[in-house]
Image (tube, rainbow, N blue to C red):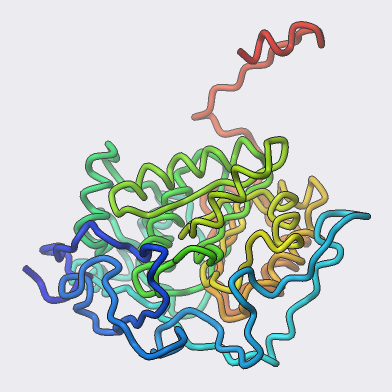
Length: 376
């Protein structure tokens, strides 16, 4: 068995336990930066250290002498205007940020040996345009991505036969810890392209315990999209014992709060409901080190830009960030420049707006009276 989890000939074995989660009794953890930790320490295994949880250089937390407490640092109350209008911006210069690991990518020999001509042909064949410095080469097979064995097994058992163009380029970029903006149409396989690297990212974080906020945040514009993403997160999270939840408006708040308070590693959320929970101190984003904006253009079309800004202000500025959009409008560029420093820009397919031919769209014209029956 290979010593490095990034090997492509053999994927290092790892325990199914853990993956960044722990029981509610865990209060102090340290993590190792050793590249062999995937096979040596298992998924989410930790060792104890003194008091406080900023004991190692890899701890993805904030060391704050004033202390935020278990419910975070957010303001209280609500009311008036959009959700979060009383949420105070965090002065990150006043806090000492403990460094955390972002780069987990070990380039496979087959990828390293791929010529620039081969890479250019792959990009041309899949209508891919990449802009950015020191971009990793695309991977062609699942094994080349270098995922741990438990992730590789989850991919195989989930029925994925081959990589999509998005996965080929995003997995190396995300696993390397680079910020990224992806422009691609809906239905092109981007959900697991950002969720699987997120799960690998969790391996290097202290376990999420009761009272913590999520370590991974995915923002989606609508309840439907959030729930779809949540289903994928649950599907892969089950293999590793990862707790994930989905918070969205139009549903009772308290079951969602109860899930968050148990300690969840991954939270998929719509902006309004998340801000509501942040403002009322039901959760916090002080533990968040990996943030995704999915279908950012739709969120802007729906008027969520102020909410997005409020949420991003609550996350440490050195976070790992990914953003996906179907268009590359000026508003999207402005968000990318502000929140994703040094990002890689990737376009898959044409920038011209068009419907995805792989998605069947049906329109039913019905009366208001018949709407609920039709939804059933």
